[in-house]
Length: 596
Image 1 (cartoon, helix red, strand yellow):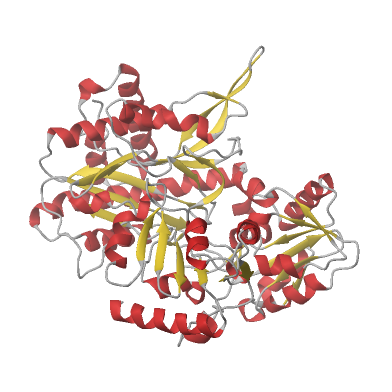
Image 2 (cartoon, rainbow, N blue to C red):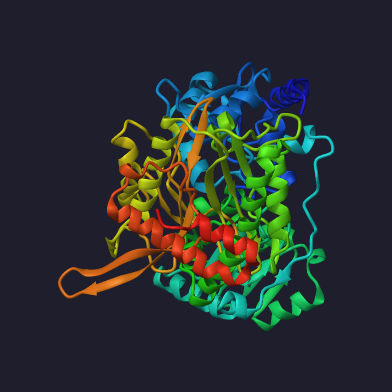
Protein backbone atom coordinates (compact mmCIF):
# COMPACT_ATOMS: atom_id res chain seq x y z
CA UNK A 1 0.00 0.00 0.00
CA UNK A 2 1.42 3.39 -1.01
CA UNK A 3 1.69 6.07 1.66
CA UNK A 4 0.08 8.60 -0.72
CA UNK A 5 -3.08 6.48 -0.73
CA UNK A 6 -3.37 6.92 3.02
CA UNK A 7 -3.11 10.70 2.68
CA UNK A 8 -5.92 10.70 0.10
CA UNK A 9 -8.08 8.49 2.30
CA UNK A 10 -7.54 10.70 5.34
CA UNK A 11 -8.53 13.71 3.25
CA UNK A 12 -11.77 12.02 2.16
CA UNK A 13 -12.43 10.93 5.73
CA UNK A 14 -12.01 14.50 7.02
CA UNK A 15 -14.38 15.79 4.34
CA UNK A 16 -16.95 13.31 5.64
CA UNK A 17 -16.34 14.49 9.21
CA UNK A 18 -16.83 18.13 8.18
CA UNK A 19 -20.12 17.29 6.45
CA UNK A 20 -21.39 15.52 9.58
CA UNK A 21 -19.99 18.12 11.97
CA UNK A 22 -17.72 15.63 13.72
CA UNK A 23 -14.58 16.74 15.55
CA UNK A 24 -13.08 13.28 15.97
CA UNK A 25 -13.82 9.73 14.87
CA UNK A 26 -12.65 6.45 16.38
CA UNK A 27 -11.94 3.45 14.13
CA UNK A 28 -11.39 0.16 16.02
CA UNK A 29 -9.89 -2.98 14.53
CA UNK A 30 -13.06 -5.02 15.07
CA UNK A 31 -16.20 -5.76 13.07
CA UNK A 32 -19.91 -6.13 13.88
CA UNK A 33 -19.03 -9.40 15.64
CA UNK A 34 -16.12 -7.93 17.64
CA UNK A 35 -13.65 -10.23 15.92
CA UNK A 36 -9.89 -10.10 16.33
CA UNK A 37 -9.54 -10.90 12.63
CA UNK A 38 -12.46 -9.36 10.69
CA UNK A 39 -13.58 -10.18 7.14
CA UNK A 40 -12.00 -7.79 4.61
CA UNK A 41 -15.23 -5.79 4.36
CA UNK A 42 -14.64 -4.61 7.93
CA UNK A 43 -10.87 -4.04 7.80
CA UNK A 44 -11.55 -0.32 8.10
CA UNK A 45 -8.72 0.58 10.45
CA UNK A 46 -6.23 -1.16 8.20
CA UNK A 47 -7.66 0.63 5.14
CA UNK A 48 -7.59 4.13 6.64
CA UNK A 49 -4.20 3.88 8.40
CA UNK A 50 -2.05 1.38 6.54
CA UNK A 51 -1.27 -0.37 9.84
CA UNK A 52 -1.90 -4.10 9.36
CA UNK A 53 -1.50 -5.38 12.94
CA UNK A 54 -4.48 -7.26 14.36
CA UNK A 55 -4.82 -4.99 17.42
CA UNK A 56 -4.98 -1.22 17.40
CA UNK A 57 -7.37 1.73 17.23
CA UNK A 58 -7.15 4.72 14.90
CA UNK A 59 -8.43 8.17 15.83
CA UNK A 60 -8.87 10.90 13.22
CA UNK A 61 -9.53 14.54 14.08
CA UNK A 62 -9.81 17.56 11.77
CA UNK A 63 -6.03 18.08 11.79
CA UNK A 64 -4.42 15.12 13.60
CA UNK A 65 -4.51 11.35 13.43
CA UNK A 66 -2.95 8.47 15.32
CA UNK A 67 -3.00 4.77 16.10
CA UNK A 68 -2.93 3.32 19.61
CA UNK A 69 -1.45 -0.17 19.82
CA UNK A 70 0.40 -2.37 22.32
CA UNK A 71 4.01 -3.50 22.60
CA UNK A 72 3.56 -6.51 20.29
CA UNK A 73 3.23 -4.10 17.37
CA UNK A 74 5.49 -1.14 18.21
CA UNK A 75 8.18 -1.91 15.64
CA UNK A 76 5.69 -2.98 12.97
CA UNK A 77 3.54 0.12 13.51
CA UNK A 78 6.54 2.45 13.37
CA UNK A 79 7.43 1.05 9.95
CA UNK A 80 3.91 1.02 8.54
CA UNK A 81 2.78 4.41 9.86
CA UNK A 82 5.92 6.32 8.86
CA UNK A 83 5.01 9.01 6.32
CA UNK A 84 1.24 8.39 6.45
CA UNK A 85 0.27 11.37 8.58
CA UNK A 86 -0.76 9.14 11.47
CA UNK A 87 1.25 9.15 14.70
CA UNK A 88 2.01 6.04 16.74
CA UNK A 89 0.85 6.06 20.35
CA UNK A 90 2.57 3.30 22.30
CA UNK A 91 0.10 1.99 24.86
CA UNK A 92 1.50 1.27 28.29
CA UNK A 93 4.56 3.46 27.78
CA UNK A 94 5.43 6.44 29.96
CA UNK A 95 4.38 9.65 28.25
CA UNK A 96 1.76 8.04 26.01
CA UNK A 97 -1.57 9.81 26.55
CA UNK A 98 -4.67 7.81 27.30
CA UNK A 99 -6.64 7.65 24.05
CA UNK A 100 -9.91 9.05 25.41
CA UNK A 101 -8.10 11.83 27.31
CA UNK A 102 -6.35 12.76 24.07
CA UNK A 103 -9.67 12.78 22.20
CA UNK A 104 -11.26 15.00 24.86
CA UNK A 105 -8.34 17.42 24.64
CA UNK A 106 -8.52 17.56 20.85
CA UNK A 107 -12.32 17.86 20.70
CA UNK A 108 -13.06 20.44 23.35
CA UNK A 109 -16.35 21.18 25.09
CA UNK A 110 -19.53 20.95 22.99
CA UNK A 111 -17.67 19.02 20.29
CA UNK A 112 -18.84 15.74 18.77
CA UNK A 113 -17.01 12.41 18.62
CA UNK A 114 -18.17 9.78 16.15
CA UNK A 115 -18.10 5.99 16.18
CA UNK A 116 -19.86 3.36 14.10
CA UNK A 117 -21.99 1.64 16.75
CA UNK A 118 -22.09 -1.51 14.64
CA UNK A 119 -18.38 -2.24 15.14
CA UNK A 120 -18.00 -1.04 18.74
CA UNK A 121 -18.46 -3.29 21.76
CA UNK A 122 -21.38 -2.00 23.82
CA UNK A 123 -19.35 -1.92 27.04
CA UNK A 124 -16.64 0.19 25.42
CA UNK A 125 -19.16 2.53 23.79
CA UNK A 126 -20.96 3.09 27.10
CA UNK A 127 -17.68 3.75 28.94
CA UNK A 128 -16.68 6.19 26.20
CA UNK A 129 -20.04 7.97 26.35
CA UNK A 130 -19.81 8.36 30.12
CA UNK A 131 -16.41 10.05 29.89
CA UNK A 132 -17.45 12.30 27.02
CA UNK A 133 -20.71 13.29 28.72
CA UNK A 134 -18.73 14.41 31.76
CA UNK A 135 -16.83 16.85 29.54
CA UNK A 136 -19.84 18.16 27.63
CA UNK A 137 -18.91 16.27 24.46
CA UNK A 138 -21.56 14.46 22.40
CA UNK A 139 -21.11 10.90 21.13
CA UNK A 140 -22.58 10.18 17.68
CA UNK A 141 -22.94 6.45 16.93
CA UNK A 142 -24.96 6.28 13.72
CA UNK A 143 -22.38 6.92 11.00
CA UNK A 144 -20.27 4.51 8.94
CA UNK A 145 -17.88 6.75 6.96
CA UNK A 146 -16.47 3.79 5.06
CA UNK A 147 -19.83 3.08 3.42
CA UNK A 148 -19.34 6.37 1.56
CA UNK A 149 -15.59 6.87 1.10
CA UNK A 150 -14.26 3.31 0.61
CA UNK A 151 -14.54 2.75 -3.12
CA UNK A 152 -14.51 -0.92 -4.04
CA UNK A 153 -15.18 -2.00 -0.46
CA UNK A 154 -15.49 -5.80 -0.43
CA UNK A 155 -18.89 -7.40 0.08
CA UNK A 156 -19.59 -9.66 3.05
CA UNK A 157 -18.48 -13.20 2.17
CA UNK A 158 -20.95 -15.81 0.96
CA UNK A 159 -18.78 -18.88 1.50
CA UNK A 160 -20.60 -22.12 2.31
CA UNK A 161 -20.50 -23.40 5.87
CA UNK A 162 -20.12 -27.05 6.84
CA UNK A 163 -21.23 -29.09 9.83
CA UNK A 164 -18.93 -30.99 12.19
CA UNK A 165 -19.79 -34.51 13.25
CA UNK A 166 -20.42 -35.23 16.91
CA UNK A 167 -17.46 -37.62 16.74
CA UNK A 168 -15.32 -34.44 16.47
CA UNK A 169 -17.27 -32.03 18.69
CA UNK A 170 -18.18 -34.49 21.45
CA UNK A 171 -21.56 -32.81 22.01
CA UNK A 172 -24.64 -32.06 19.94
CA UNK A 173 -26.00 -28.59 19.24
CA UNK A 174 -29.22 -29.48 21.05
CA UNK A 175 -27.24 -30.41 24.16
CA UNK A 176 -25.23 -27.18 24.08
CA UNK A 177 -28.41 -25.10 23.71
CA UNK A 178 -29.91 -26.94 26.69
CA UNK A 179 -26.87 -26.14 28.84
CA UNK A 180 -26.97 -22.48 27.78
CA UNK A 181 -30.65 -22.23 28.70
CA UNK A 182 -29.84 -23.77 32.07
CA UNK A 183 -27.28 -21.05 32.73
CA UNK A 184 -29.70 -18.33 31.61
CA UNK A 185 -32.25 -19.54 34.17
CA UNK A 186 -29.69 -18.92 36.92
CA UNK A 187 -29.62 -15.26 35.86
CA UNK A 188 -33.40 -15.12 35.39
CA UNK A 189 -32.96 -14.33 31.68
CA UNK A 190 -35.34 -15.45 28.92
CA UNK A 191 -32.95 -15.34 26.01
CA UNK A 192 -29.35 -14.69 24.96
CA UNK A 193 -28.04 -12.65 22.02
CA UNK A 194 -24.93 -14.25 20.54
CA UNK A 195 -22.75 -12.06 18.33
CA UNK A 196 -19.18 -13.44 18.30
CA UNK A 197 -18.44 -15.78 15.42
CA UNK A 198 -16.45 -18.42 17.28
CA UNK A 199 -19.22 -18.75 19.87
CA UNK A 200 -21.77 -19.26 17.08
CA UNK A 201 -19.57 -21.81 15.33
CA UNK A 202 -19.17 -23.74 18.60
CA UNK A 203 -22.85 -23.72 19.58
CA UNK A 204 -24.13 -24.84 16.19
CA UNK A 205 -21.22 -27.22 15.41
CA UNK A 206 -20.53 -25.50 12.11
CA UNK A 207 -17.40 -24.05 10.58
CA UNK A 208 -16.84 -21.63 7.71
CA UNK A 209 -14.30 -19.75 5.67
CA UNK A 210 -15.27 -16.09 6.05
CA UNK A 211 -12.21 -14.96 8.00
CA UNK A 212 -8.60 -15.67 7.20
CA UNK A 213 -7.18 -18.37 9.52
CA UNK A 214 -10.32 -18.61 11.72
CA UNK A 215 -12.83 -21.24 10.47
CA UNK A 216 -15.92 -19.18 11.23
CA UNK A 217 -18.90 -17.76 9.32
CA UNK A 218 -20.64 -14.38 9.61
CA UNK A 219 -23.86 -14.89 11.59
CA UNK A 220 -25.86 -13.88 14.67
CA UNK A 221 -27.96 -16.02 17.00
CA UNK A 222 -30.69 -15.69 19.59
CA UNK A 223 -31.24 -18.53 22.06
CA UNK A 224 -34.40 -18.87 24.14
CA UNK A 225 -36.81 -21.51 25.44
CA UNK A 226 -39.30 -20.47 22.78
CA UNK A 227 -36.89 -20.52 19.83
CA UNK A 228 -33.25 -20.76 18.91
CA UNK A 229 -32.63 -18.75 15.75
CA UNK A 230 -29.49 -18.63 13.62
CA UNK A 231 -29.28 -15.50 11.45
CA UNK A 232 -27.15 -16.27 8.40
CA UNK A 233 -27.10 -15.49 4.69
CA UNK A 234 -29.09 -18.35 3.09
CA UNK A 235 -26.53 -18.52 0.26
CA UNK A 236 -24.09 -19.90 2.82
CA UNK A 237 -26.21 -22.95 3.56
CA UNK A 238 -26.31 -26.27 1.77
CA UNK A 239 -29.46 -28.35 2.02
CA UNK A 240 -27.58 -30.91 4.10
CA UNK A 241 -26.36 -28.33 6.64
CA UNK A 242 -29.82 -26.74 6.85
CA UNK A 243 -31.37 -30.16 7.54
CA UNK A 244 -28.76 -30.90 10.21
CA UNK A 245 -29.48 -27.61 11.97
CA UNK A 246 -33.24 -28.11 11.76
CA UNK A 247 -32.83 -31.57 13.30
CA UNK A 248 -31.20 -29.90 16.31
CA UNK A 249 -34.14 -27.57 16.85
CA UNK A 250 -32.63 -24.53 15.12
CA UNK A 251 -34.72 -22.00 13.17
CA UNK A 252 -32.88 -20.41 10.24
CA UNK A 253 -33.36 -16.73 9.42
CA UNK A 254 -31.68 -14.22 7.12
CA UNK A 255 -28.55 -12.53 8.49
CA UNK A 256 -29.97 -9.02 8.18
CA UNK A 257 -33.19 -9.95 10.04
CA UNK A 258 -31.45 -9.85 13.44
CA UNK A 259 -32.19 -6.17 14.09
CA UNK A 260 -35.92 -6.42 13.32
CA UNK A 261 -36.11 -9.65 15.32
CA UNK A 262 -34.56 -8.09 18.43
CA UNK A 263 -36.60 -4.90 18.00
CA UNK A 264 -39.77 -7.05 17.98
CA UNK A 265 -39.10 -9.07 21.14
CA UNK A 266 -42.26 -9.32 23.28
CA UNK A 267 -42.80 -6.81 26.05
CA UNK A 268 -41.25 -7.92 29.32
CA UNK A 269 -38.65 -10.19 27.73
CA UNK A 270 -35.51 -10.41 29.85
CA UNK A 271 -32.66 -10.35 27.34
CA UNK A 272 -29.30 -11.75 28.41
CA UNK A 273 -26.41 -9.57 27.25
CA UNK A 274 -22.65 -9.57 27.83
CA UNK A 275 -21.55 -5.97 27.29
CA UNK A 276 -18.18 -6.89 25.79
CA UNK A 277 -19.78 -9.46 23.49
CA UNK A 278 -22.46 -7.41 21.71
CA UNK A 279 -22.10 -4.46 19.37
CA UNK A 280 -23.56 -1.14 20.51
CA UNK A 281 -26.03 -0.87 17.63
CA UNK A 282 -27.62 -4.21 18.46
CA UNK A 283 -27.81 -3.35 22.16
CA UNK A 284 -29.60 -0.12 21.30
CA UNK A 285 -32.10 -2.16 19.23
CA UNK A 286 -33.49 -3.94 22.33
CA UNK A 287 -36.91 -2.37 23.04
CA UNK A 288 -37.37 -0.24 26.14
CA UNK A 289 -40.22 -2.57 27.08
CA UNK A 290 -37.70 -5.37 27.56
CA UNK A 291 -35.17 -5.74 30.38
CA UNK A 292 -31.47 -6.06 29.62
CA UNK A 293 -29.98 -8.66 31.96
CA UNK A 294 -26.17 -8.53 32.27
CA UNK A 295 -24.83 -12.09 32.09
CA UNK A 296 -21.27 -13.45 32.09
CA UNK A 297 -19.74 -14.78 28.86
CA UNK A 298 -21.66 -18.05 29.22
CA UNK A 299 -20.74 -19.55 25.86
CA UNK A 300 -17.07 -18.54 26.02
CA UNK A 301 -16.64 -20.27 29.36
CA UNK A 302 -18.38 -23.44 28.16
CA UNK A 303 -16.33 -23.43 24.98
CA UNK A 304 -13.07 -23.03 26.88
CA UNK A 305 -13.61 -26.24 28.88
CA UNK A 306 -12.78 -28.81 26.22
CA UNK A 307 -14.52 -32.17 26.54
CA UNK A 308 -12.63 -35.46 26.24
CA UNK A 309 -13.46 -35.82 22.54
CA UNK A 310 -12.11 -32.35 21.81
CA UNK A 311 -8.95 -32.98 23.88
CA UNK A 312 -8.32 -36.23 22.05
CA UNK A 313 -8.73 -34.31 18.79
CA UNK A 314 -6.14 -31.81 19.98
CA UNK A 315 -3.69 -34.59 20.82
CA UNK A 316 -4.18 -36.19 17.41
CA UNK A 317 -3.69 -32.83 15.72
CA UNK A 318 -0.43 -32.39 17.63
CA UNK A 319 0.86 -35.69 16.24
CA UNK A 320 0.12 -34.57 12.68
CA UNK A 321 1.67 -31.18 13.36
CA UNK A 322 4.71 -32.78 14.97
CA UNK A 323 5.31 -35.03 11.97
CA UNK A 324 5.10 -32.05 9.62
CA UNK A 325 7.52 -30.09 11.81
CA UNK A 326 10.05 -32.92 11.85
CA UNK A 327 10.04 -32.90 8.06
CA UNK A 328 10.28 -29.11 8.02
CA UNK A 329 13.19 -28.79 10.46
CA UNK A 330 15.08 -31.56 8.66
CA UNK A 331 14.66 -29.56 5.45
CA UNK A 332 15.68 -26.31 7.16
CA UNK A 333 18.84 -27.83 8.59
CA UNK A 334 20.00 -28.85 5.11
CA UNK A 335 18.74 -25.81 3.22
CA UNK A 336 20.21 -22.94 5.29
CA UNK A 337 23.88 -23.78 4.57
CA UNK A 338 23.02 -23.98 0.86
CA UNK A 339 21.96 -20.30 1.01
CA UNK A 340 18.48 -20.57 -0.51
CA UNK A 341 16.28 -19.88 2.52
CA UNK A 342 14.41 -16.64 3.23
CA UNK A 343 11.77 -15.87 5.83
CA UNK A 344 9.12 -16.28 3.13
CA UNK A 345 10.56 -19.67 2.11
CA UNK A 346 10.16 -20.78 5.72
CA UNK A 347 6.47 -19.91 5.65
CA UNK A 348 5.93 -21.66 2.32
CA UNK A 349 7.69 -24.86 3.37
CA UNK A 350 5.79 -25.04 6.66
CA UNK A 351 2.53 -24.75 4.76
CA UNK A 352 3.67 -27.41 2.29
CA UNK A 353 4.62 -29.98 4.93
CA UNK A 354 1.49 -29.39 7.02
CA UNK A 355 -0.79 -29.60 3.99
CA UNK A 356 0.44 -33.17 3.41
CA UNK A 357 -1.07 -34.28 6.73
CA UNK A 358 -4.58 -35.82 6.99
CA UNK A 359 -7.44 -33.52 8.06
CA UNK A 360 -5.39 -30.37 7.34
CA UNK A 361 -7.61 -27.36 6.64
CA UNK A 362 -5.23 -24.38 6.66
CA UNK A 363 -2.99 -22.18 8.77
CA UNK A 364 -4.27 -21.01 12.16
CA UNK A 365 -2.55 -17.61 11.74
CA UNK A 366 0.04 -15.98 9.52
CA UNK A 367 3.44 -17.55 10.15
CA UNK A 368 5.95 -15.38 12.00
CA UNK A 369 9.41 -16.26 10.69
CA UNK A 370 11.85 -13.67 12.01
CA UNK A 371 15.59 -13.94 11.39
CA UNK A 372 18.03 -11.89 13.46
CA UNK A 373 16.48 -8.45 14.20
CA UNK A 374 13.14 -9.37 12.63
CA UNK A 375 12.69 -11.95 15.39
CA UNK A 376 12.43 -9.04 17.84
CA UNK A 377 9.26 -7.82 16.09
CA UNK A 378 6.70 -9.83 18.04
CA UNK A 379 4.05 -10.01 15.29
CA UNK A 380 6.40 -9.74 12.33
CA UNK A 381 5.27 -11.04 8.96
CA UNK A 382 7.69 -11.35 6.07
CA UNK A 383 6.88 -10.27 2.52
CA UNK A 384 8.91 -11.25 -0.56
CA UNK A 385 10.16 -7.72 -1.25
CA UNK A 386 11.84 -7.30 2.13
CA UNK A 387 12.23 -10.84 3.54
CA UNK A 388 15.59 -11.49 5.16
CA UNK A 389 17.82 -14.26 3.87
CA UNK A 390 18.54 -16.82 6.57
CA UNK A 391 22.30 -17.23 6.92
CA UNK A 392 24.08 -20.03 8.80
CA UNK A 393 24.58 -17.88 11.90
CA UNK A 394 22.44 -16.57 14.73
CA UNK A 395 18.83 -17.29 15.68
CA UNK A 396 15.64 -17.83 13.69
CA UNK A 397 12.29 -17.47 15.48
CA UNK A 398 9.35 -19.37 13.94
CA UNK A 399 5.81 -19.03 15.33
CA UNK A 400 3.26 -20.95 13.30
CA UNK A 401 0.17 -23.11 13.54
CA UNK A 402 -2.40 -25.12 11.66
CA UNK A 403 -6.10 -25.81 11.59
CA UNK A 404 -6.86 -29.50 11.44
CA UNK A 405 -10.45 -30.71 11.37
CA UNK A 406 -10.01 -32.14 14.87
CA UNK A 407 -7.80 -29.48 16.48
CA UNK A 408 -5.86 -26.23 16.30
CA UNK A 409 -2.09 -25.90 16.78
CA UNK A 410 0.14 -22.98 17.73
CA UNK A 411 3.86 -23.46 18.32
CA UNK A 412 6.96 -21.30 18.52
CA UNK A 413 10.51 -22.54 18.28
CA UNK A 414 13.69 -20.48 18.20
CA UNK A 415 16.47 -22.37 16.49
CA UNK A 416 20.20 -21.88 16.16
CA UNK A 417 20.95 -21.78 12.43
CA UNK A 418 24.69 -21.24 13.06
CA UNK A 419 27.15 -19.75 15.50
CA UNK A 420 25.64 -18.00 18.54
CA UNK A 421 26.94 -15.38 20.95
CA UNK A 422 27.12 -16.05 24.69
CA UNK A 423 24.34 -13.49 25.20
CA UNK A 424 22.06 -15.36 22.80
CA UNK A 425 22.65 -18.62 24.66
CA UNK A 426 22.04 -17.10 28.08
CA UNK A 427 18.87 -15.31 26.94
CA UNK A 428 17.61 -18.52 25.36
CA UNK A 429 18.23 -20.50 28.54
CA UNK A 430 16.41 -17.97 30.72
CA UNK A 431 13.39 -18.14 28.39
CA UNK A 432 13.49 -21.95 28.59
CA UNK A 433 13.65 -21.81 32.39
CA UNK A 434 10.51 -19.67 32.41
CA UNK A 435 8.76 -22.04 30.01
CA UNK A 436 9.59 -25.04 32.19
CA UNK A 437 8.55 -23.25 35.39
CA UNK A 438 5.05 -22.70 34.01
CA UNK A 439 4.84 -26.17 32.44
CA UNK A 440 5.61 -27.80 35.80
CA UNK A 441 3.36 -25.60 37.95
CA UNK A 442 1.14 -27.12 40.62
CA UNK A 443 -1.68 -24.82 41.69
CA UNK A 444 -4.90 -25.01 43.72
CA UNK A 445 -8.39 -24.96 42.27
CA UNK A 446 -9.50 -21.36 41.82
CA UNK A 447 -6.15 -20.09 40.55
CA UNK A 448 -6.16 -17.31 37.93
CA UNK A 449 -3.69 -17.04 35.08
CA UNK A 450 -2.36 -13.76 36.46
CA UNK A 451 -1.24 -15.62 39.58
CA UNK A 452 0.92 -18.00 37.53
CA UNK A 453 2.40 -15.48 35.10
CA UNK A 454 5.39 -14.66 37.32
CA UNK A 455 6.61 -18.26 37.03
CA UNK A 456 7.38 -17.69 33.34
CA UNK A 457 9.06 -14.33 33.99
CA UNK A 458 11.11 -14.83 37.16
CA UNK A 459 14.26 -16.21 35.52
CA UNK A 460 14.16 -13.28 33.11
CA UNK A 461 13.44 -10.68 35.79
CA UNK A 462 16.27 -12.06 37.92
CA UNK A 463 18.57 -11.14 35.04
CA UNK A 464 16.96 -7.76 34.30
CA UNK A 465 15.11 -9.08 31.25
CA UNK A 466 11.39 -9.10 30.44
CA UNK A 467 8.83 -9.23 27.62
CA UNK A 468 5.83 -7.06 26.89
CA UNK A 469 3.24 -9.61 25.74
CA UNK A 470 1.14 -12.08 27.66
CA UNK A 471 2.48 -15.51 28.57
CA UNK A 472 -0.53 -17.52 27.48
CA UNK A 473 -3.85 -17.29 25.60
CA UNK A 474 -6.70 -19.74 25.20
CA UNK A 475 -6.88 -21.90 22.04
CA UNK A 476 -10.05 -22.91 20.22
CA UNK A 477 -10.85 -26.45 19.11
CA UNK A 478 -10.66 -26.19 15.32
CA UNK A 479 -11.56 -22.57 15.97
CA UNK A 480 -9.84 -19.26 16.70
CA UNK A 481 -6.22 -19.62 17.72
CA UNK A 482 -6.83 -16.82 20.25
CA UNK A 483 -9.84 -17.34 22.50
CA UNK A 484 -10.88 -16.50 26.03
CA UNK A 485 -11.94 -16.11 28.64
CA UNK A 486 -8.80 -17.48 30.36
CA UNK A 487 -5.28 -16.24 29.80
CA UNK A 488 -1.92 -16.08 31.57
CA UNK A 489 -0.56 -12.55 31.77
CA UNK A 490 0.34 -9.83 34.26
CA UNK A 491 -2.98 -8.00 33.85
CA UNK A 492 -5.74 -9.19 36.17
CA UNK A 493 -8.41 -11.48 34.71
CA UNK A 494 -11.03 -12.91 37.08
CA UNK A 495 -11.40 -16.12 35.04
CA UNK A 496 -9.89 -19.08 36.86
CA UNK A 497 -8.11 -21.94 35.12
CA UNK A 498 -10.30 -25.06 34.93
CA UNK A 499 -9.78 -28.64 33.72
CA UNK A 500 -10.02 -28.92 29.94
CA UNK A 501 -8.82 -25.39 29.21
CA UNK A 502 -6.12 -25.31 26.52
CA UNK A 503 -3.70 -22.41 26.89
CA UNK A 504 -0.37 -21.42 25.35
CA UNK A 505 2.89 -21.23 27.31
CA UNK A 506 5.12 -18.74 25.48
CA UNK A 507 7.62 -16.60 27.38
CA UNK A 508 10.18 -14.71 25.31
CA UNK A 509 12.82 -12.01 25.19
CA UNK A 510 13.48 -9.51 22.40
CA UNK A 511 16.53 -7.38 21.70
CA UNK A 512 15.61 -4.70 19.17
CA UNK A 513 17.62 -4.96 15.98
CA UNK A 514 19.40 -8.11 17.15
CA UNK A 515 17.13 -11.13 17.70
CA UNK A 516 14.02 -12.49 19.36
CA UNK A 517 13.57 -15.67 21.38
CA UNK A 518 10.27 -17.38 22.21
CA UNK A 519 9.46 -20.98 23.13
CA UNK A 520 5.79 -21.98 22.94
CA UNK A 521 3.88 -25.16 23.67
CA UNK A 522 0.18 -25.70 24.32
CA UNK A 523 -0.81 -26.87 27.80
CA UNK A 524 -4.04 -28.32 29.20
CA UNK A 525 -5.26 -27.72 32.75
CA UNK A 526 -6.02 -31.03 34.48
CA UNK A 527 -6.59 -32.40 37.97
CA UNK A 528 -3.30 -33.33 39.65
CA UNK A 529 -4.50 -34.52 43.07
CA UNK A 530 -7.33 -34.06 45.53
CA UNK A 531 -6.10 -33.55 49.09
CA UNK A 532 -8.06 -34.03 52.30
CA UNK A 533 -7.01 -30.76 53.90
CA UNK A 534 -6.18 -28.33 51.10
CA UNK A 535 -8.59 -29.10 48.30
CA UNK A 536 -7.90 -30.02 44.70
CA UNK A 537 -4.65 -29.15 42.96
CA UNK A 538 -4.18 -28.84 39.21
CA UNK A 539 -1.21 -29.13 36.87
CA UNK A 540 -0.61 -28.83 33.13
CA UNK A 541 -0.35 -31.48 30.44
CA UNK A 542 1.94 -30.30 27.64
CA UNK A 543 0.43 -31.51 24.36
CA UNK A 544 2.64 -29.91 21.69
CA UNK A 545 5.03 -32.44 20.13
CA UNK A 546 8.19 -30.91 18.69
CA UNK A 547 11.83 -30.86 19.84
CA UNK A 548 13.10 -27.78 21.67
CA UNK A 549 16.49 -26.82 20.23
CA UNK A 550 19.17 -27.81 22.76
CA UNK A 551 22.13 -26.21 20.94
CA UNK A 552 21.61 -22.75 22.51
CA UNK A 553 21.19 -24.11 26.06
CA UNK A 554 23.71 -23.16 28.75
CA UNK A 555 23.31 -26.34 30.77
CA UNK A 556 24.91 -24.99 33.94
CA UNK A 557 22.07 -22.43 34.18
CA UNK A 558 19.45 -25.20 34.39
CA UNK A 559 18.53 -27.02 37.61
CA UNK A 560 18.35 -30.80 37.81
CA UNK A 561 14.56 -30.54 37.86
CA UNK A 562 14.56 -28.43 34.68
CA UNK A 563 16.91 -30.84 32.90
CA UNK A 564 14.69 -33.75 33.96
CA UNK A 565 11.61 -32.03 32.54
CA UNK A 566 13.31 -31.29 29.22
CA UNK A 567 14.60 -34.84 28.85
CA UNK A 568 11.21 -36.30 29.76
CA UNK A 569 9.47 -33.97 27.29
CA UNK A 570 11.82 -35.06 24.52
CA UNK A 571 11.21 -38.73 25.38
CA UNK A 572 7.49 -38.03 25.00
CA UNK A 573 7.98 -36.29 21.63
CA UNK A 574 10.00 -39.19 20.25
CA UNK A 575 7.64 -41.84 21.61
CA UNK A 576 4.51 -40.17 20.16
CA UNK A 577 5.97 -39.38 16.72
CA UNK A 578 8.34 -42.27 15.91
CA UNK A 579 5.77 -44.64 14.42
CA UNK A 580 4.68 -41.96 11.93
CA UNK A 581 8.20 -41.34 10.55
CA UNK A 582 10.44 -43.06 8.04
CA UNK A 583 13.88 -44.38 9.00
CA UNK A 584 15.76 -41.17 8.20
CA UNK A 585 13.23 -38.96 9.98
CA UNK A 586 13.20 -41.22 13.03
CA UNK A 587 17.01 -41.09 13.26
CA UNK A 588 16.95 -37.29 12.99
CA UNK A 589 14.31 -37.01 15.73
CA UNK A 590 16.19 -39.47 17.95
CA UNK A 591 19.23 -37.19 17.77
CA UNK A 592 17.21 -34.02 18.44
CA UNK A 593 15.51 -35.54 21.47
CA UNK A 594 18.54 -37.17 23.10
CA UNK A 595 19.05 -36.36 26.76
CA UNK A 596 21.25 -33.44 27.74
